[in-house]
Image 1 (tube, rainbow, N blue to C red):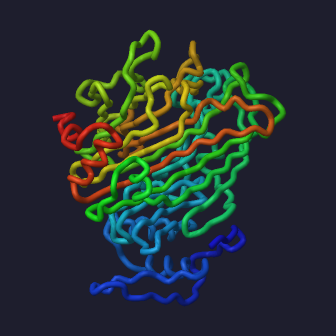
Image 2 (spheres, helix red, strand yellow; image 1 turned 90 degrees about the vertical axis):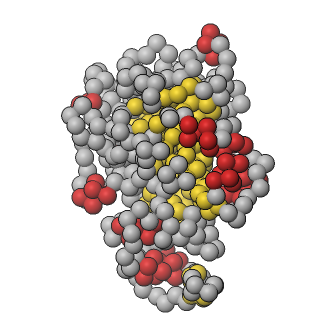
Length: 431
């Protein structure tokens, strides 16, 4: 069922909704026949109290402040929470209904304050869209002639604080639109039309496509964002004027036992470039980054600010993380061209090679020099190639997020097939 923005009304609008009993524990599944039924169900359910770290807690928290959009499966187990006011981002998701674990990191203090911060508003969320590059001579985050220092760094308001327009919403997808007028560090103006669609995925179908049989011993949820930018201006975007990129970032809850796993292609540095970029915020120490012949292991504990990246010659279109404490395996899959391509370089300096940047990144949050901290959280990020576009042309980037939790033997099968390493190898990486 489809309904447009004109049908989106306040959650407090009340109509009746019927439910039916589905098991001996009196678990109920809402009967949703029209948009008003879902809004009434959300209102009723968020009148209840939920434990922190559950999806119900986060849904209630957002509903009290903003307009929640909810994607759901038939049994209301796989749930995805989206907010148009927060740039059409996926706030969080769960594999087990309202009482289930909430996978996304949410900045309760910032959202609860109702205010905006300087430089960046780290609201949280599992999938948000930015545009790159962050640094360099074509940066979108620094004004022309400014120095590449934190005091001058500013996330553009169009994808930091402004609401995205709703195009359509259904049980399984939500689409958004935003017009952006940006000026890069070189002083060139970019007229951009950004659109994005969030879709609920079938984890069973995803695993089948990767040669894995789904097991009922695990619980799961999956979604993807399809992101498109169009050059709406008269001037071509190229290596002389600057080419933006689509940049998707997901914030997740850190843990002392959480480890990011990034598979990569081996080969000589003379033809494939550096093995890894590990000096975004100073060199990452060996106790936080382990280089294996098949994958990079990166600590995701939220204790030390650090970031890594993999270039176009070495990146594979998949990565993930495993949290041993919570038994949560997260898989990230994204689109990338078959052949090496130009990717924007986001390092904070004038660059010799501004289009030799990274395809996939991981960030671990930690205290800043002044002792404050944005999170704690960790991020997994993917980018599109640099958008070499003439007027009216478009580029698309898809980013998928799937969470699996439950029986470790089944999770191990998924990890070996998709990431190329076992759960035991991940657990032992920093022991």
